[in-house]
Amino acid sequence: MSRAEIFREFTFEAAHRLPNVPEGHKCARLHGHSYLVSVHVMGEIGRESGWVQDFGDLKSAFAPLREQLDHRYLNEVSGLENPTSEVLAEWLWERLKVEIPDLSEVRVRETCTSGVIYRGN
Image (cartoon, rainbow, N blue to C red; front, side):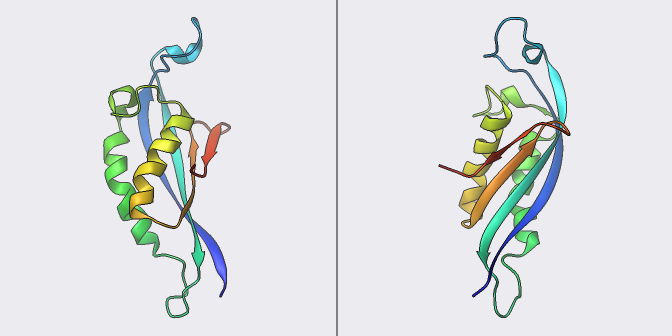
């Protein structure tokens, strides 16, 4: 059976500050990002369907998380009191894995040139 990895990308806007950085660090100040999240699934390509998973399933799984994050102050979201990209990626993973058992990777970009790849524990 053939295997493939699929992904779907999502965006949201949010503000945050990083409370645990050294004094004077620019990220200690309130600022915002246009986040890009990529949700990846690895699995067998179905004989009948011809796909690994319906992209609509990924959209449905991400929708309630986007609602919690979009145009929010991330530091006020439970579990994101120190909302680094790494912490955000792990937070997303923990919630998506429940809905997407074959989740293989979550990527979070906070800028065009900076991001994190999280693959679970």
